[in-house]
Image 1 (tube, rainbow, N blue to C red):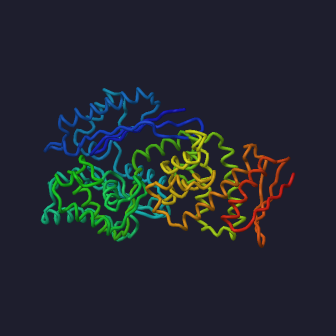
Image 2: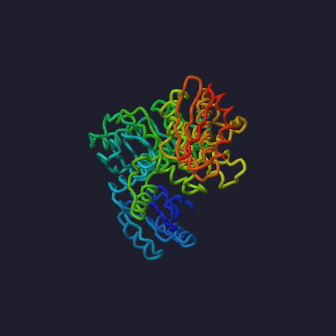
Image 3: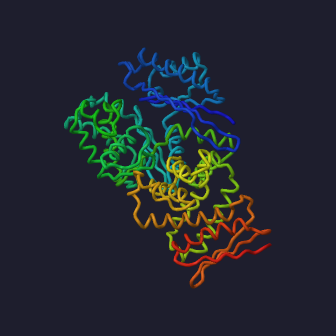
Length: 507
């Protein structure tokens, strides 16, 4: 096992995350610390950091260094972004950090920052073409990508903190000031023709984008607390933006979804997003909870573990990571998955499930037993909870709910478990019916490897006029597995409307 620390000193805040990488290449975050520095507001008339900026940054870095030592981090990857790279004495601050803490703080240029943020997004959001904006305190990075490959990048010298100071928008954004604000941002965007009217989805990285998403979720009574991969329309954004424009600083502190420590810079931040909507013609924004720090980790991980820098299939990559973190028997889980997919494909006309449900079943099958980590008894519902809250990438929020429900029912339908779930009404009756069918297939697959010895090596599923056929291929007697199929036969008939006939073939 190795332990890596990622440090990001931004214009608004400083972050430390510590991540374990295990011997089987699985990884997870074990510590997170955030400190609000507001460095973009602590620069004097000559462009130098104030003594306050130096002191608070050094206090934070000493704290980070202590935590890295406490957690025995073997490697520290630390970067400084817009505020430090633009301050005249930014290099002096970096030198002091190295001297006093031993942490090598790298000042990265805006183009590098943009590319690293892109790595954090492209490995966690399944979008082929889009325009990423990483809106920080002192800069905004824009990354245009098509077919998951970077086409253009730029780092623009404005963010939520320095624009708040520049246009004095802490309390309100007056109509006259709003015109000047919008003109300034629009003139910056106009320098790069590839931004204008791209009409691609906007993908927002940073606290402002996350906060906008949270406010919209609260206004719509969204039943989940997830923000990563949450999307909303330009129209929904403008409704919440209009509401913000009519509030004072004190009133904004009480808006659901808006944290009090961001209420002073949210007008500037959302005004920048509004300009991006106007300039690009985009109709949708996808919130990314992953960005620079995640990109730094993926860059480190790909080199340390000799893996691809950009995962070709982010759902598969994240599923396997969770599987390797929590599964007691990875080989059993993979075999159950193979058996499930064989039945899904062989009985396609019988079950009539959408083709897209195949990958949901595949994911549920791989992760169906991870709840054993908590408690073997009722592990299916523990698996459901873990899947619902896991970092599964490449799924919509609804699809992740469906995967969780399939796994939660693989020991039998338990409607009572989801009866009080906040999200239950987000799924239609037809979707619940499809979950039942997928859960049945998963239950059959697990029954066919009940002894976890792979006695049933492969299967062939087909349909006849009034029954479903299942040919089982085994190296010897498989009485335990055959008994499980018999127990599941009534569920099969009730759900599929035909009887199930299983035939054992000894190879």
